[in-house]
Image (cartoon, rainbow, N blue to C red; front, side, top):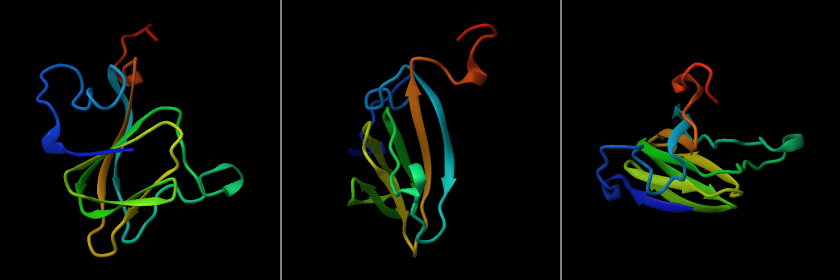
Length: 124
């Protein structure tokens, strides 16, 4: 896991904003998430309802509002507005939202290819 602040990102005019810390030429998937008070993401996501969640690539979380902890392989790291967390391949990860200040995040993955909505017709 890598943790840094939005203010630490290099100013970019080309490519994606996380290019220095998230491998891949293009942001290829992602979303905006509004967690409930005290919610833990990806609970019971593993095979047979087991409690783990991993990827084969890096995933970025940008904390837009609120606070909580990022749980990586059972260890909790405090997160708050303006933090960026990069989860490494194979790390079991769960975002835990605060009861007092629920968390709002953007999460994304990057790859060599653009999102399917941005690809030219007939391209891969």
